[in-house]
Image (cartoon, rainbow, N blue to C red):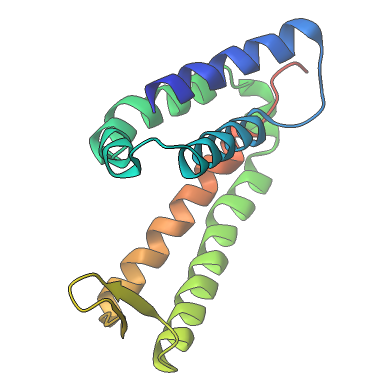
Length: 160
C-alpha cells in the first residue's frame, strides 16, 4: 500500500511536470493494482501469503493518508474564491451530502428488505443472508457519503 501511495505521488508529479492532462492519477493506480492482481492470480505466487502482506490497516488510512489530503486542500485553497463561492459550496456540501445520504440509506434498506444482501460463510462454504440492523445501515450510509466529499476534493485543480 505504501508503494502504491508513492506511485500515486510520482505519477502526479510526472503528469504535472510534463503537462499531461489525460486521465486522473487514481485511474492509473487502479490499473497498476489490477495488473498486480492479474500477475498474482496467473502466476505461481502463493496468493494466501500475498494477501497477508496486503492486509488493509484502517489506522494507516485515517492517521496517515487522509490528514495530508485535507491539509493540502485547505492550504492550497484560494481564500478569495472560496468566500465568493461560499453559497454554492454550502449547497453542494450540505444539501448534496444530505441527499446522497438519504439515497444511500433508502436504497440499502430496500435491498436489505428484499434479502438481496448475502455474505460468504467460509465455515459452511455457502452464501448466507447478511443481517444488518437499521443503525448499521444508517452508519454505513453516512460513511459512504463522507468519502464522496473526500473524492471530490481530490479532483480539484489549483492551477487557476
